[in-house]
Image (cartoon, rainbow, N blue to C red):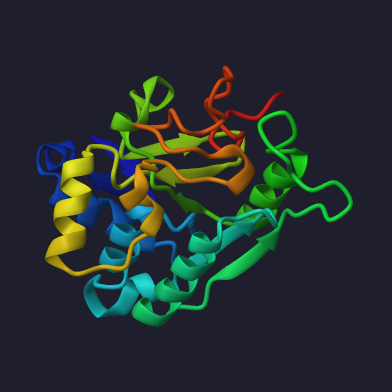
Length: 223
């Protein structure tokens, strides 16, 4: 079991992806406006936003929805952004990480400190951070728990989809006719910025041809 916000989280809920999703989001929603869902408009967020806004008595509606705009997002990402706001009736906050003087151009120049700074600004004052991380996404995420403590940022990190597979996600998206990023239909399993993302399985299309596997957002802070 894990304890979060003074409440016990039953680890047996991990046996059922749907139960683990709902249970973990309920725990996160207890933080109200001090909970942040960081949204990149991928298939994970399609499921997370839908479930969050279905929570009892509208408790999920208080959670802040934030995206980081690097200035080099795919046009399809911007379209999905608009579709999310229309379908879910939410206003998504924006943290600007663009650099007009030196735009991100690809793996050799991307994921600058500006993106991490935008993350820190998003989480300022937060008690909980909701992510779309899944164990299946790659080796760096294989040990992800439903609820973790980020001691460096002094907040709880909620990973409601930790035990979900791609098959689970697509089943939910099609069952509920949820909006999703159209590039997923073109072989992009993971979608970041346009200059750095190619079609590929898992996270193989991110920074393809390099050793890079994470943008820095889900990497522990340096002391």
